[in-house]
Image (cartoon, rainbow over the protein chains, first blue to last red):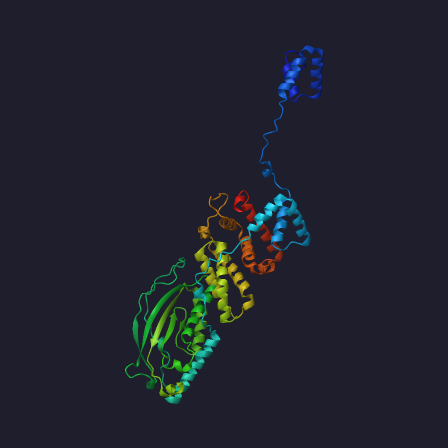
Length: 330
Length: 161
């Protein structure tokens, strides 16, 4: 700024009133005013114009809400620790003091208390009934049971009628007869919705097998019928553990069909059993060693399959109940 | 574990596991499949699992199966039933609904930890065993989860008033 004179003193006065003058400029202004006392009135007027008195009445009411609590994080930690029941004694005391004195802490405590999650017990698992197991037979127990039953039956037949072991044809391979083949629909590996395919047909077929022990077969029903009850296609999980579980669980179904509590009750309906056959395993009437081989084969074969094809067969033949058995049961 | 004990597990825990999985992934059918898979797995190992530890074993299996499912199937819209809230406040939101949304915004590990804590009352050690974490990590995740839930309600205090 150049020197103060009559032509610029008003602007300089304004700068002074607004505090924009340096010390030397202020000195220059006052020197000028001392030399021109007639301008004192202008000076006072300029000062008055610029110093607008502050009106403090309309204060911003929400200020406190905008202020952030610098200790909020620490307070929240104390509250969480208390609600989690992991607060130390010292922390608990500190929190108690806070809750008495600090409004923020009180509010935070109220909010955190309400954010403990509660289980909605109306939400239930719909498939619970399907998970209930009625019987469990391990492979070892199943093998034992089949062996035991088969041996008992053989001994029984041998004792009553005798069995010709010289025959070439296996006597108990009823369900392993040639089964009709179906044109199965292709399974899309990526289609997760496919669970069970429609059963294309349920034929009843006659087999050529003859029941070898005639005394217990009614004369007019000496052939065995095999009927497909159901045909299911079950996608194999890509998860190796699940695949194992799926196959094993299906394998469990077969022994369940044999699970009749009393041996004598098995005799009349010995042949009226359900057999399961699939593209990866085949559980039919068979003895222990056959079953063991099949289970082993399952584990080797199913790895590259997309789905399990499970046929449920009913193989049926009427067998008379021996008279001695009726006698025993009285 | 006997068959009876296994069946007790089905009756006692299948709902709880279903709710745990459902809250985590927000998809009913997927949750049902996972629960089904979990019990099949447990059934196959029924001789190796003691009844006393069955519950935590089931939750552990559920968590692992769920994580596997999420990883394998990231494209699935798990959240189609419960819309993510984000910053848009919904007018008729109650506390529970808001908590659901807040919960769904949590990172997976925090969500599982806080669900096991609040739903099942597991301690940090047990949660750690289920989620394969140490106790300190569990504590950190739970504290963070609670703060994240709280942060969701910032500006929505009327919901918790």
